[in-house]
Image (tube, rainbow over all chains, first blue to last red; front, side, top):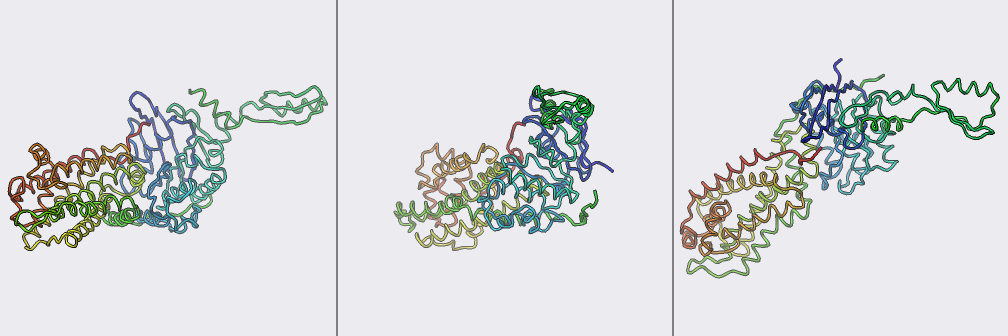
Amino acid sequence: MTPTISVRGLRKSYRDVHAVDGVNLTIDQGEVFALLGPNGAGKTTTVEILEGHRRRDAGEVAVLGDDPGTAGRVWRSRIGIVLQTATDAAELTVAETVRHFATYYPNPSNVDDVIDACGLTEKAGSRIRSLSGGQRRRLDVALGIVGNPELVFLDEPTTGFDPEARRQFWALVEKLAADGTTILLTTHYLDEAEALAGRLAVIARGRIVAEGKPSTLGGRASADAVVSWTDETGPHEVDTADPQRVIADLSARGVVMSGLRVSRPTLEEIYLDLIGDAA
Amino acid sequence: MTTVHMRQTSGALPSVLGVGLARGVIELKQFAREKEAVIFTFTFPALLLVLLGSIFSDAYGNTGVTASQVFAASMIAYGIMNTTFVTMGTGIATDREDGTLKRLHGAPVSATSYFVGKIVLITVVTVAEIVLMLAVGMLVFDMPLPSTGERWLTFAWLLVLSVVSCTLLGIAVSAMVKSVRSAGAVTTVPVVVLSFLSGVFMQPINELPDWMLKVSSAFPVKWIGQGFRSVFLPDSMTRWEAAAAWEPGMTALVIGAWCVIGLMLCLLTFRWTNRRDG
């Protein structure tokens, strides 16, 4: 099966800055893929090239089998782009706007269902200018998915959300993914990537520095574990590749331990390590 | 993956014209709901006409025409520039800044559909503007409607050429607007300045300094104002025109040339989004 997104050797420079410097990516149908990286790492440039909003300098790009740089209206009816900072249509109501956008597409979803899925039913009759920040972003999602897309781009969708709004948003993304929609998500929140993505890539300085499942990224599963405990002589900490043996030895020696813990590096530690190497 | 959502993929794309007309309806709703747009671009020309026409109301010799009536004819040009050039220039700058254009570019909406929507907006608002200006001219200043079919014909081609040229120039100027905050100034200042230079706010035009006439004759505003005077005022009023004649041929030529210039500028400068660094 041809992948939904296939990128080989993608490059884009702004004057002498290499914003994207040889990115390779393959994303299959139905995946939720997160592109993770600090500000200025090249996330947005990469995604905007895939969306057809920006031209690339070099590389092969195929999204749903077409080149986004030249693809037409049929292609655009198959993707959904969720904008991050739009403030358009302030004087229209939520329902008017979603209903209007549905008319652009050959097979739109039911407008009321989309409004409901985005948690905006109570606000359907309200002017968009009166929405809160979180509601506004959920409207952006509604406009991005009303065309029933096969692939959805979410570029830092929850920046500025309060924790409750983020949880609601995650639930919405999970619902989309459960419908088989392929999702490409960029974020600089690690918990977001870990909660939503089946696979993720870390981008830094325009390059992919690691790629994998959240649980195994950057050798997370095989990295040394830290065994820590407290006994009568005080707190202890041991770095080990084999925590089970350390614990077995301690037990065999009859050490009385309290607060025994085995921890692997968190995704955040791995991530900071990865972008630190690249910086 | 246990269930794969089945997508219907057989539907045909909606037509470019259909999407454009739907956008026109949305554009009109947005325009009508923005109080500033309605007050400043739509009713302001009529308000200004009432003021100027009430202050200057002397009769021109024994022609039976008052200065108020000359304003009523000339100021249609100002009304059209507001509903076309200013509305288009600020409208596209706003669409570019607030994400409208970016959103449409990411959806199956062609540039043609977007502009069909704008044309619907401009046409409806301009027709309403002219009706309002004519109503003020007729009811407040007793300006008679054109009496002959020939004059109505002039009215028709003049209106079409004026709307097309000013709309295209409005699209072109939107590319020069850096932000919405400056859009009002960038579009309004040339309109107001040219209206003074072109005998729309000052009359009679043949008493303006020579250099002003030379400058304004290169721009469409002078010819649009003169054209509407030729539609609504008697031929005896040509005495107070710059060339002592209505000059319909020259009027069509200059405004027509600006349509071509405007179109070329649009094709060279239109862009979907703000230029941003990555």
